[in-house]
Length: 146
Image (cartoon, rainbow, N blue to C red):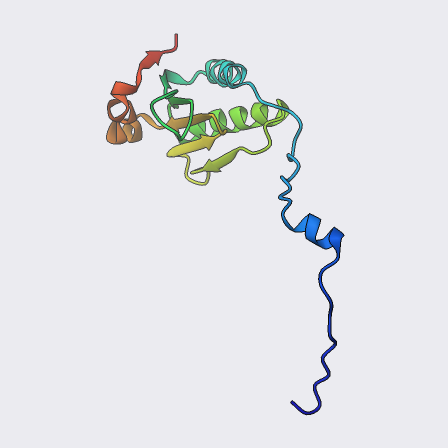
């Protein structure tokens, strides 16, 4: 090909070859390891503080890969659902759990909080009755919080 100058390159250097097969694992974003049981206690305490109603904890360990626990609770109104969810989110953030994801906050009919090993559903009573998550997960081992 006229006008194209190619530089002849020799074999790869030893240092380039030695680095080629090494796979480096990225450094963790946070050095803090969150204890699932402690996070569950925090969530349940906040739900109790905020007067959430009919709280149920479903143990998913060994039954599902999505999470270790699912917590289902109710608020009396949209405003109450939003306030309960806000408080749980605030306390999870203060405890160092920065990777929490949330869905449903604009309407507050049903708010889902995904804190990794714990998933929290805060419903209005009518919405909770419609979806009936407890029945869907009945075989997973429900326990009521008092």
